[in-house]
Length: 253
Image (cartoon, rainbow, N blue to C red; front, side, top):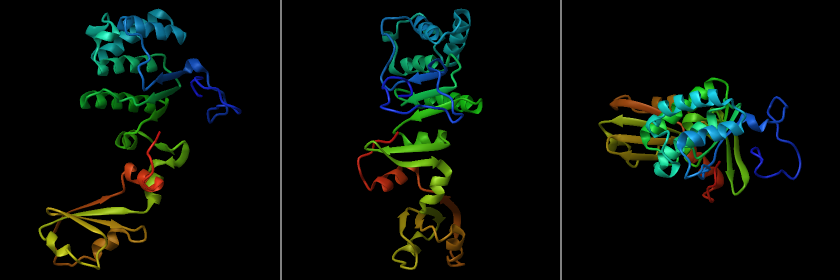
């Protein structure tokens, strides 16, 4: 609906400022490829830039700069169909950001990318966000959501599951994990006074309820127990989502 692909039955789509969205100020990277296979890379980028109202000499300069930054400068005249999936994703990414949009919608933006290029995309996304661009990131990869997003909106079977500040949601979820590295992991076997625990080699993990702070738990441990390392972990977003939908079918966005 934001992109105008579907029309809402009623209502308006507004920024928080109360203004409607100018479609030319939106960048969009779809999950499915939305570029023409038999067209050269640079021509494809310039075509979409023209649709957004960019002046062609400026668009060409910026396109060449982005192709260089993303390692595609030697493929500017290659047809899209000759590129790998990762390269095609880079072209779509350039198209979505070239016109300095106020809002960028990225749908499964890391599809087809190797770890090196995933890091490159994350760097660019963070730079854009720091510069004031609003980015709507849709993904099933919870680790990426945790790393990049300030606020989350989770959907299960078309309905809202969670919405709000990511850090606040983690704080409110309740369960926290304390992980200890000790030379006596066997000490914790069958110790009913301790909370739910899991032993993995020399590491012992405990799930703590919200009413017990990690500091209180650590103080309850025997003074003569040799603890070499302590980690306090909040639950990952994937775990929170699964708990919220009680094992239902995942369809997060």
